[in-house]
Length: 62
Image (cartoon, rainbow, N blue to C red; front, top):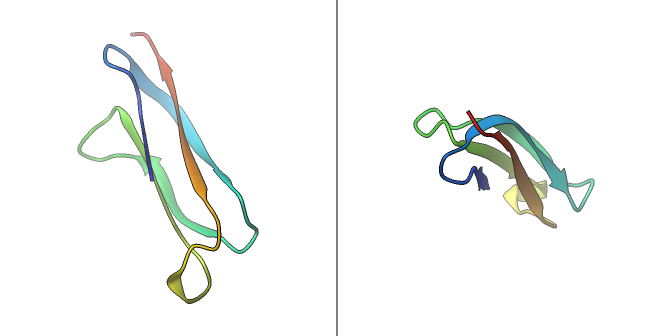
């Protein structure tokens, strides 16, 4: 899942929301190649996601 800042802004921070306790987040970080994006990687039992993951990007104007 990816959250992207609008054009003309910069990523300040980010996070995620999970719809199920069965989901395990394995990574939540700024994208290495696009600094305006926040990437969240998650998995669930047997590799399936038993719910939803929402990525958030908190952006600021430089």
